Amino acid sequence: MNIKYVVIFNIFLLLFSVNTTTAQGFLHADGKNIVNGAGENVILKGIGTGNWMLMEGYMMKTEGVAGIQHEIRAKLEDLMGEEKADEFFNAWLKNHFTKTDVDSMKALSFNSVRVAMHYKISLILC
Image (cartoon, rainbow, N blue to C red; front, side, top):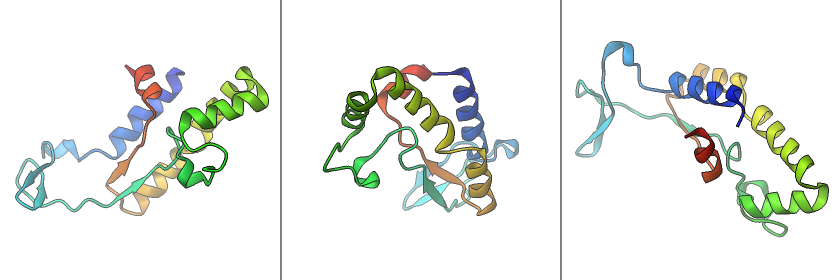
């Protein structure tokens, strides 16, 4: 993975993390509530990045052709070859979800995000 994506991913995590400048600490469960380090209730307002780092066939409506990430990639490699498939996936990661999306989410008061990640992405980041 390109260092640019690692930087973007880290910025993304910082934008949606709990405000650490007030030393609130980690979120945790307190009975049925989610609270910060100061014991204050936190309401999570979240959104998912759907298909950005993990192509999910049920969301893309590709079940009849390829249902899961490795099947989607295999179909693309069959159609265009490995090199072009790599180019496609790099362009997908770069353009599917951008800083503009993060800014929009923040402007809409979201404070959490579900980032579905394919295991190969996590291996690259480690």
